[in-house]
Image (cartoon, rainbow, N blue to C red; front, side, top):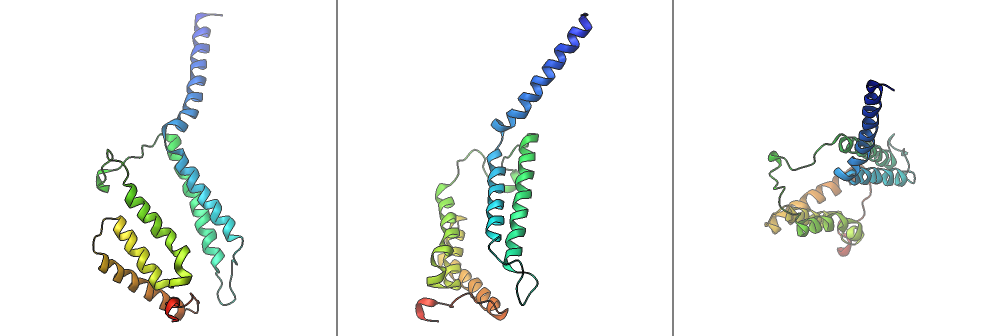
Length: 183
C-alpha cells in the first residue's frame, strides 16, 4: 500500500467517525425533546379527532376536521423543529423579544398560565363560558405581568360573553350563560 492510499484510507475513516459524531451530537446539543413533544401533541390531536365527526349535518366541516388540521400542523412543526436541531440551530432569546437569556424561567408566571389553560376543562360546565373565559383571561394577563385585575376580569367576561352569543347565533349550544344562576 502506498503512502497516498494510506492517507486516503485514514481521511475516509476520519470522515466516517465525524459523521457518526455529528449524527449523535445533535441529541446532546439542542432541545430535540421540544420537537418530539410537539409531534406528540400532534399525535394526541389526531387520535382525539378520530372520535369526532369530520363533517356535520348542517355544514360541510365538522369539529373533527379542525382537530385533525391542528394535529397535522403540529406534526409538521415538530418535524421542522427536529430538522433545525439537527442542523445546529441555536435557540436563544433574540434582542427583539426583550427577553434576558441569562435569567431563569419565572416559575410563578408559568404555573399561573398553566392554571389558566387547565381551568376551562375543570369549571366550564359549572360557571359557563363567559365566567370561565373571564377567569382564564385574568390569569393569563397576570402571568404576563398585568396588575389591573378588575380590567382584566371585565375584558375576559366581555370576550367570553360575545363568544357565547356568537356561537349561539351560529346554532351551537355551549351550555348556559351562567349555570350557577340558572341562566
